[in-house]
Length: 266
Image (cartoon, rainbow, N blue to C red):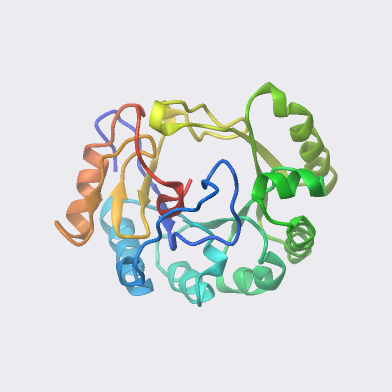
């Protein structure tokens, strides 16, 4: 479906949980964040209903599962299978930090997941620990190796950098990506509360003129723009109306927002 600026909105990103098993410095303050109540987080059945309506009535054909960290969500494989079986979903992907990827790569592929985006901000163990506040680099690299052997259609790496000061770290990640045949995207660290965001290097993220995305937060709100506080609850006025309003009121470009990546996803 076209929005007011003639952009074809065909991509739905779904945050399945606000929980995460890492504490990345660019995503979460040291003291953590206030988590949603479990009863406020969407069920798989609610998510599936959103997907079905988005596909059937609004032309959505790409779906990405995010978090928080989607692989810590109980029975996440079941949700992948449910969405993969929706007629009209042509591209099903997931963004993950990769910590649990070695365990879940095969069942994800068998359930119908097409592509993976894996966060990898450093290939140096000490740097990785500093950025994520966790010592999981070896687990992530092992998971990537497993995913590569299984044969996903595409595996991309996401590397967050804070400008030129992090280029050396980023280039080491690039060497790793090139060696293993992974695509790499550099995501410049942003501050959406100040309206500071940039286009992803190697991707279309942050390019408002080409934005084709809606986001479903883990508490059931449709966000037409990551860099805006505009949202519409699927509970009231309902799924179809929330999707319709999200597309028709999608802003021409992002500005500022108080959004939390932990429940809306990146």
